[in-house]
Every structure is written in C-alpha cells, then in structure tokens.
Amino acid sequence: MSDAAVPSIDLAVEADGWGNGDDLEALVARVVSTTCRMARLELVPGSELSVLLSDDARVRVLNREWRGKDTPTNVLSFPGGDEDEPPFGPLLGDLALARETVAREADEMGIPFCDHLTHLVTHGFLHLFGYDHIDDREAAEMETLERQILAELGIADPYGDDLAIPADMESETSR
Image (tube, rainbow, N blue to C red):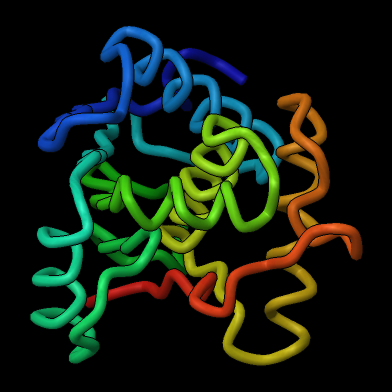
C-alpha cells in the first residue's frame, strides 16, 4: 500500500481518561493503515479522517441527534461521502467514541481497554466504507474482516465464544 492510500487523521481528545495522546494517535494510525491495506480500500490521495475521543455525555447527544437514540454508545460513524464507490475521499468521515462505554464494555468482556478501543476504531472505520451488520450476511462479512484485521494487529477475536459481547455493541452508521 502506498502512502497515498493512508489518510491523514485528525484526532481530538475531548474527555479525560483516554491516556497518552501520542499513544492514541499511534494506535488509530496503525488501525487505519492496517484496515486500509487488508480491506483493500482505494482512497483519494490526501484523504482525511476525523476521530473524536469523548465521553458518554457527548456521544449520547450525538446519538440522539443523528440516530434518535437517547443513550451513549461505544462508537458512532459519520461517513463523509459516497461509501459505495471507490476511490473514497477526500473526506472519509468522522468517528466518535465514548470513553466510559468503551471502558465498561472492556471490563465486561474481561479484555484490555486498548484491545477493545482497537476493535471499535476498526469497526467504526469499516462503517465509513459501507460495511454494516444489519442482516446476517452483512454481519458475517464485516465480522470476518474485523477478525482478520485484528489478528494482524495482535488482538484476539472479539466475537469468540469465550467473550461476552455487550448488547449495545451495535455501533451504527449515521447520516
């Protein structure tokens, strides 16, 4: 994959408790780069992705405004353009993650926070390109790709039988 295929990432940390900004930037960049390569995403040179690391209160407002659901969720994806036709970009879209929900889900599943964050960034980023889990076929395709990407990143299968997936692991695409 050439450098032109990797988007620039605008990372905003809006809430406390996320950890070191440099480490977070490196994590998001690694996830995005690996996902672009493994999903064979064709991007417009100079493409951009925005990632907001916030809290439950902020994500709850976004979820209510854009999806009509008055509750926080782990990750929201806001596509920036037509996700059906490559090349994608230049504005790929926005991801918003809620720290308390991410931490609670990681605890419930008994996995490291960083592993769950990696999964959610992968999951949310794939939503920007039309991947979804509305029906069983789409869910199987998306989950298979997520498993492959996460394995490449050294993260255990998040859908494995030995993990309890939280009921609200339904991070949806918003328009």
